Image 1 (cartoon, rainbow, N blue to C red):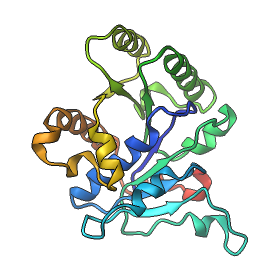
Image 2 (spheres, helix red, strand yellow; image 1 turned 135 degrees about the vertical axis):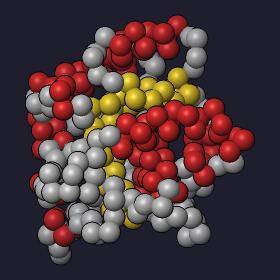
Image 3 (cartoon, rainbow, N blue to C red; image 1 turned 90 degrees about the horizontal axis):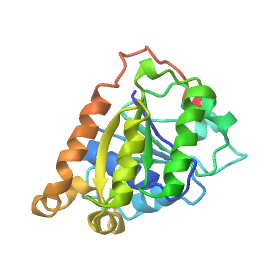
Length: 230
């Protein structure tokens, strides 16, 4: 099972937007994705609760919930027929927790918003992934997603300069559009809106999906239990 972790300790970076749209993209392509929400705000689970039963299904796991009646590993179990597993992480993650959080991940996506505060937070997040979580650049598991970018603005140019300096691949640039708000309100993904409405967005999502496809590991190569990762 491919494990995709969406991570940025800075709140409001677009983790849930990325997680839910990825889940919808995979479901639309005929796969059976599982979406695990570790954020107590439960935004991914709210999105899923709005999703029509007529749409391709996404299996939801409310990982932020705790129950004394079952073990943690049972609570976080993923059905064997689900693939990939997309994990929406909470804000304010401590650096020391990143190693366990990312263990066994095939891909780690870091969404970054175009603002000075977000750029600074992203720099620290990448440094912590490399130095604390010990993710090697040569593994090519970390990908950056520039989120809500308005073309030809000063801050967007600053963001791009910063991203080019990291030696970490920029795998997608998602534009600032109301399409994400419209789809979120209905439990949909960008791929499920009318093509004429999202034609400017589909190309970047295609690039992101191709990058993720290249991060898939052979069966058994990362046989790590989900509860150990989390």
